Length: 338
Image (cartoon, rainbow, N blue to C red; front, side, top):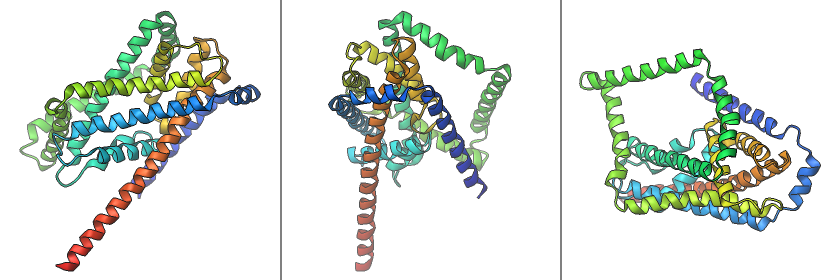
């Protein structure tokens, strides 16, 4: 009961943080200007942005399926697709839950959770690498403006909050992790508790190694590049959707995609508020657009994706429920004939 109460409290706090960030993003907006800009939106291009997002999601499922196959021969695109959609839906509700939900979605009696989770960690490692690549490319194309923005609006505020006390806490935490890892290694054969942890970590490591033993690594790399191309294309399509932004280039879309990725660091459901605030801040400080334009751009980009994720998550939830119902019905029938 206490654990459930803590989970509820955690969700309330994270949701509250999202509300605060939304308030920061929306305060001071001239709503008449915002609504006037909204009336000029070319919605066909917003739909095209959602289509680019859909392409990225399809490629992500196909890429993950290829990584799962060496460890789980029964892995299919549909299983990876539904698990991803359920994970995305969960992320919109509870920050940080998406990867755990989608891992559970592909786990079965022959493919344990730890191994599945290892493949998710490897995917995240590749995504983190691509965030760095996108950021570097953005800096190359728009060096002065981006370096100034990152230094003054992202790095300095973050560094200002890292007090000596926090650094000490982080140091102690790292030391504790190192000591715990040493204990696991030394006591794995002597203690059932540490043996279980060692076994779980080995499963995770097997999942991480899945990339090394998978076939068609070249296809994996191509999928990764295409996924991030479509993510950037989403921003470009919204440029075309808003009169006054048509002059922004793919390099600008690269930059705003990189900035948007920083918003995922903030532990709020679906990046609520954090994405809107950072994007509007970048567009006002670097491009000189009004705050209303930046918020509208962020809203069109974020909410078109969110609506798509909700729809796909609901469809996948229904599909999984139907499959489970059919499986249980078949098991019941089989038992009745025995």
